[in-house]
Length: 256
Image (cartoon, rainbow, N blue to C red; front, side, top):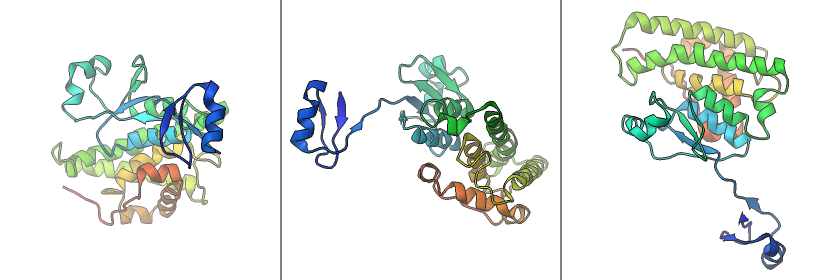
């Protein structure tokens, strides 16, 4: 058994169960932590909010993730990578034994959310709750991410040409989605489903932290005053703050 010693020592030892009691007496250990093998590896570039969602789920489930060295445009074009992930998309997940592979951030997050003791909290303990969580998770992916990513690629990443008509259409779509979110949280609700953090909240928080940097501006926030408080409240959850950090709210929308 591999154990990590508590306050009396920071060293690690490989020991048999036969000697465990003697070790406790020798070092006067009151607490030990069993080192868990990682559940798998996630490949991605730094700062990917879809990865942050998975990291929060992993922390709540007390499971570990590994993050191999990754270079966008290099690692994901390597034949060994493409043999597991044919489209070369990230985030990409590989199980610890390298027999199970996933792409699509929401699928990865859902798998990790289901892989520990917090699964019923994150995904719901009954069919109706699970369906509501799924509804909001898909809302985050389709409505919020769908409205945020194209403008991001135009004005921040500069990966596609600026198209004013498309930019304005995306901004309008985000505004409509934010109004829907405002309706859900305007009564001071801290979480979208139930009274605990779920995958619904994480799937909404992810794209909103991104939109807040350049598109979810002061004017839009005036029309949805409760949304800002909702987002800030989620970041008070320690596991969320650890991976998402602080939300930056832009005052004036960034345009091309």
